Image (tube, rainbow, N blue to C red; front, side):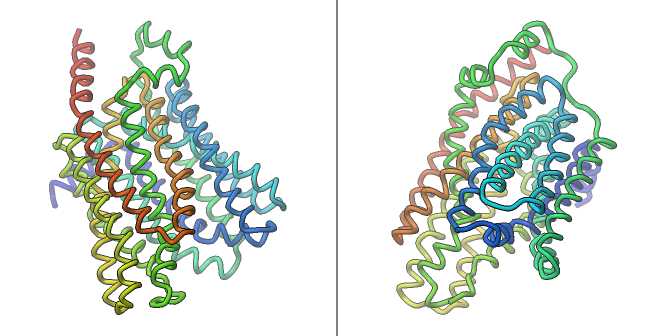
Length: 423
């Protein structure tokens, strides 16, 4: 425990400021998200319009993540982070002053673009100030901060929304503005100063897609990561529908999904940093394989157990205990895999293209968030949730095998970088 606290204190100040910001931002966003769809439902004409508004944001983010990463490599991490959070704050307030489907759709697009600029720059900043062997711990710490917010936010939101749904937007906006001020006043610019002539030329003239497409290791990683992301998208949004399809006779309106979410947040807060520390000196690809396999096992049983429980009309308490156990396996895989994925990209990226690579890495989550619910909705509408989760479980294991195959390429890239720096 003493070693853990010592290592936490040794983290760069920028990482700790981001930890505070991620915690506060997590609280604000998770206050809002459970009620956002209900808020829109009262403002537009149909649930289809609600779905379109919510889908437009991640679609727009697919463009913003690449742009954000690229300009963070040219103009620096700090100004992009400030601009993104300040814009988010203003756009969040905008929801209080507009009416109708078209204005909400336009605002959702701009919010997706603005929000997606932040993470590539912020993730690159962590890589800038953290030694390669400490990056997994740093990303794990930030993820723990976000999940502290995710555990507290819904409870606070449930209390605030009783008073006013508008107040939730105001609190979320104020928190984002405060985060922008933290970055402005306390975070130092970290973009590497050393850029040789070849790198400068590449930054000035190279198109983003041209740069990324010629890195086969990155492209293979992104394709594998889309499958993982689609798994996340099911558990974060579609899983309660699967439970409702298969076990409504048992639970009625008391869907067990919130209990699983609470367990997930608690486990991440308690164990994420220790797991990240354990993974620090392990081969990145093999570690992601372990995480992907546990993640896949969890998805498989999450898919099939509700079907079996529904068919045999199992006792609700037994179901809940079993699902909590299975979800703990899923969460363990998630905790192993998530921070290591960011380390993988940071280790893969050339120093002068970290922001660009982090932006590209965001594409896997954005793509999975866009297409995962479409696949889930199609199969769940046909009562094929068990088939959906089986496909994704197998896909996650395959993705883990792909990650292992990329280990050698990352090690080779790091050796080339060290040789270049020493010459």
